[in-house]
Image 1 (cartoon, helix red, strand yellow):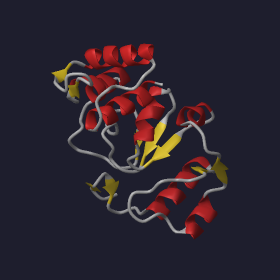
Image 2 (tube, rainbow, N blue to C red):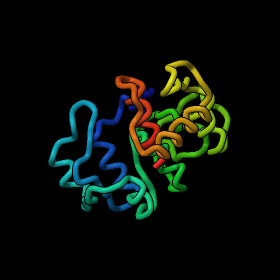
Image 3 (cartoon, helix red, strand yellow):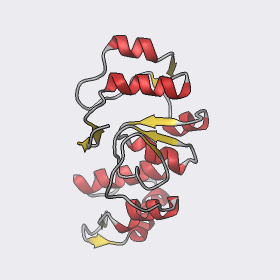
Image 4 (cartoon, rainbow, N blue to C red):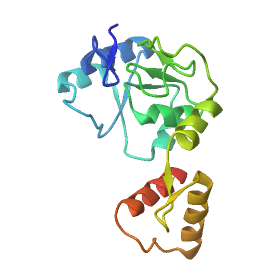
Length: 176
């Protein structure tokens, strides 16, 4: 397989990925309204390989019913790992290549294995920069969590608007 470009293998298109997933597991479940960046796979490929359609719902409920999750670069693979579901990758998302996923594309720069705890810490604590919802200043992740808890306790949205509110909303959604 070719080198990853924009997270995807250069030698596999989405139609090839559908076929690979079917070959690997014998069946393929697709969300009722899958989202694609770029051009979606041809309808014929979905009809050929996608034998089951998942109903709309929370991603976490799909994980509970899944034996394995197959992704190109989707963040759903990272969430599946955190839910204890095995993941096969067909691209090179940030969580691939560390020994936690079954990777169809290799990355020569990732030469060691890490634990899921190390990956989660790097992705959610060490790498990002957090900004206080209240002050707009840089802060620690624990400070943002405290602010979110305080907002939930008051049961009202933060007074500010704009990007900070969007970040707060995303964090609240991620914690639910």
